[in-house]
Length: 122
Image (cartoon, rainbow, N blue to C red; front, side):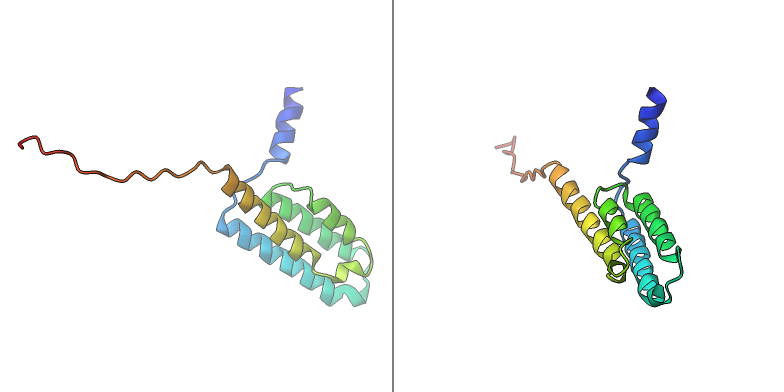
């Protein structure tokens, strides 16, 4: 049972959201959507689904698993809906939600003002 729980925690871990991860995830989403828009009219069987699978796996690897990735993947299976930039929107939303959660979880900042100590010689 311990192996299963450790495998589950590794698969669904939330990595630290760095600028590099955010920019890489956004670039991946824009490229995936761009490929689908550019190659969509060609209608190559299975090509769109391959792009979606790679985009989903890369997004999970870069940003960690988020439930919003599942409906995005399913929406991309609908023939006309895959021409919308759904991966870009999803990645933007996941990044925004992760950043908001990080800000809420952050401990409060306490600022202490220095004060003058009385002089011992007076």
